[in-house]
Length: 63
Image (cartoon, rainbow, N blue to C red):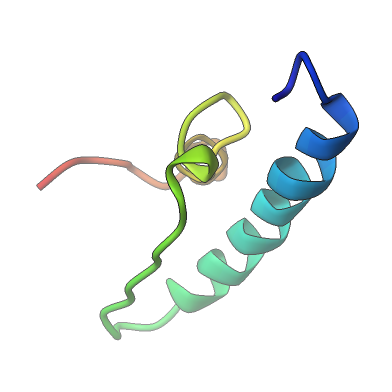
């Protein structure tokens, strides 16, 4: 999608990820357990949610 339809990728993936990472960071500020569910397209790539959280200093691990 990034190569074949870059405008669509920007709107549907990147911009949503950037908004979601801000919301996720806010949710992680308290001691409550949080559950975030997104489609696979929002996880992969250097602009995926996991990478964006990692860039903000969060440790990403698989239980």
